[in-house]
Image (tube, rainbow, N blue to C red):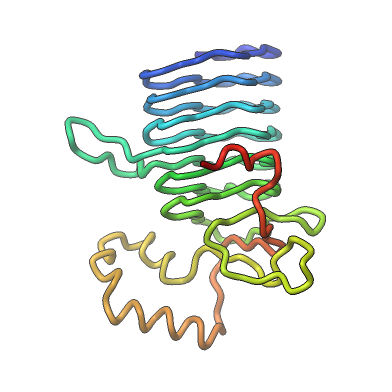
Length: 246
């Protein structure tokens, strides 16, 4: 647990079966590198801090959150691997709001996410409460039940210099064979946002009414709600991450 402690380095630690693997509060200019969390309730809880460098860490089979960011600014997350995050339970009862998020970003701005793998979790990435103006590119989102959950009012474009991210459920094409998809990847639609706003409507998820809403939305895309768009999705997993996919 690091609180009000600046200019520190945490490197090469292994943490298993804990509440938090690593927990930051009110700390600036720290380096978090080559650590492993496994089986914790939250792998890396980063809160109320600035200019953190989170590099080449691993979260394996943690619960609730692999990486949790709360009021984090001007920080960088590069080369991290987060896999198998599942929904937390207490005495056999599921915990509301802890659906198993590889990374959860709350009111965090001006951060860079590059070259990370978020895989095999309930949710790949969840952004809310004004988490905008973050750079997200060169990452791989692989086999998450839901790749993105985005609750905000501005559309976010996740790409840099004509290079976006890899999405395992991308259904576009690459006619010119340049390794970049020819159509944007948009993970969520208006129906998703409706279900996030009114969770009780989930009982209608597979009903004809929801199917009709989705069809109308695709056939007549007049009104588009704010969301995440990757205008240059990658057709292949970035090379440094390919060995992580089994």
